[in-house]
Image (cartoon, rainbow, N blue to C red; front, side, top):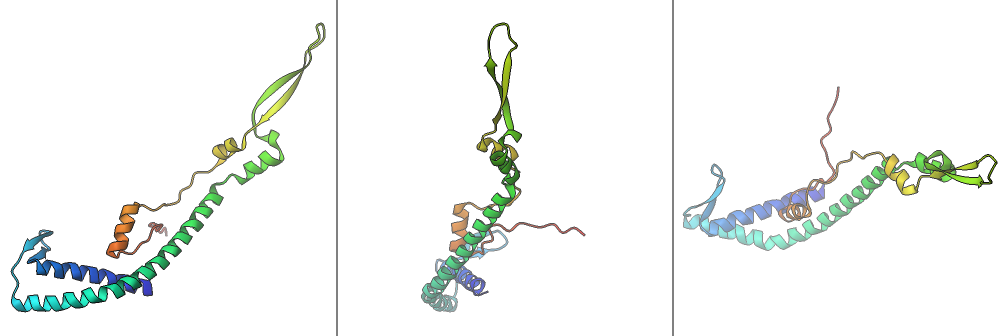
Length: 181
């Protein structure tokens, strides 16, 4: 809960500082046209803007430090969730039964057969010994591994860093669940 409030406070300060910086430059954000337009401000507006900008600017290091601490804690939790998610995904897709068969009874999973000549004397019947070639472990894993249907993070590293700098909340493995009644 504290992380979200710090996040919102940091995001609000960044947004406020950028708005007040545009005020100093004589610009304003045009909501209808989605662009920055020129504007002339009164002396009172510039004075109030200067006071607010100074207050926000001097309080920014404190808020940024709180944001850094809580963001690092959040990233630690997200990293732990990712490791748990990947390990569950690996356990669900690993062919445990097929690997058990390969280790205990390798002749059950055959790659092929080869014949070896036992008796090759002229005038007698040909005696062959059939040997089973067991599958290699890597082939067992590739053949019997089930596909995973997990959701991985959709954002790139650049988008993640941008979200962290701007102050957006990060939900890397959240996906929409469909409710069926």
